[in-house]
Length: 193
Ligand SMILES: O=P(O)(O)OC[C@H]1O[C@H](OP(=O)(O)OP(=O)(O)O)[C@H](O)[C@@H]1O
Ligand SMILES: O=c1[nH]c(=O)c2nc[nH]c2[nH]1
Image 1: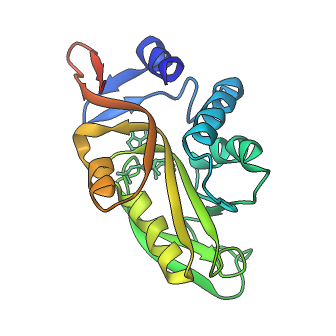
Image 2: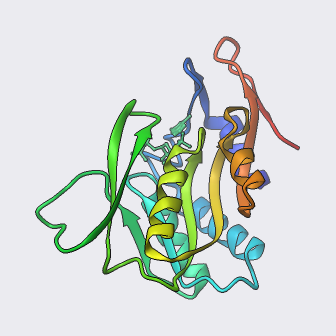
């Protein structure tokens, strides 16, 4: 998606440790018009698929997923929580994932009320790096007996391999911008063409 690539080129900064900082528009300050265009792009890619739920993971996937849902018939958006809470009651599907930016393991929790056998799920997230967050969401879907119809990602860092691994496993991964390489020394960002 050209618009997203241009925003990354204009406003993204490359940090040491394979970190691309795009918090001016994607995961701290949110550009809702850009989110809207991203939702439209995923709707075009996944058209014809029977999607009746969107699943994401807190925190940064939530806003994007909610805007995208407008393009999928206002299907419910469920987000996996990364901490237990007194607000989380009843049976739960749980696993753990290693958070890329927080550099520690988190539980990943979805109430059994909101992920069901027979659901046709689109997974949405802001970033795909090593693929740990998505592996966790996929595991929860399998536990629930839900079908993963596709995966919509804003920014994939292709050089970290998570996306290609998921494609090899047969998942339909639509990443709107794929960074092939980036250099913290000179700030260069190269996209996969
Ligand atoms: O493919 P991976 O290696 O799993 O990286 C991608 C994940 O990393 C970020 O989550 P993180 O927990 O770092 O931050 P967040 O709380 O802002 O979503 C991002 O939102 C993805 O969920
Ligand atoms: O803001 C972010 N930048 C990144 O490079 C990244 N990788 C995973 N999650 C991420 N979030």
